[in-house]
Amino acid sequence: RPTGRDSRPPGAWATRRGWVVLASVGYLACGWFLLAASAWTGGGLASSGTPGYLVLVVAAGLLLGTRATVITAAAIVLTGLGLALAGTFGVLPPPAFQNSPMSRWGDFAIYTGLIVDFQLMAARNLRVSESRYRSLVGRARDVIFTVSREGRITTLNPAFEAVTGLPAADW
Image 1 (spheres, rainbow, N blue to C red):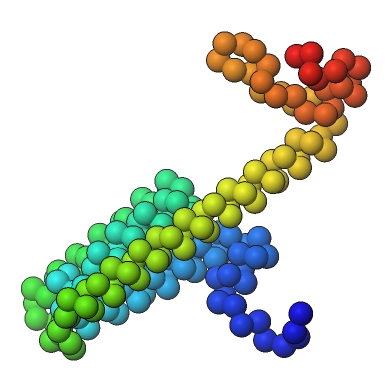
Image 2 (image 1 turned 135 degrees about the vertical axis):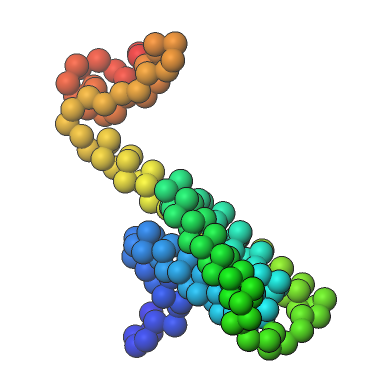
């Protein structure tokens, strides 16, 4: 592996080191900043970047859960209110450019790519969490088991056999 500067994006670097939450928050914050800048220079809520805010809400839910979804949605609603007030009082600059159908398609493609990227990050987050769970349960010295709603034992960790001397397959 070459030494020197890592050429991967910071979010990928953080994710590969297990800092998935940090990477997720970073992606969401950068996305919000870029969309806010796009909306400010593109005519406020009428800009082509506005649907991207919805991508951020979906991404927050996929990556960080319900609380992050609510916080992200609140931040976006407040951002939208700020843009609406700025437009109402004439504070917004005139749009720096007019969006052609191809530029709107480009925005759509970027938003689609972001959703895919966030879903991949969410899948990695789930794999890391499942791996930690399996490792913790597998190394535990205490018996850990799960029971179905019908009252049947559905899983047993290796400690079951060590503690009871009974084969887990019989249960």
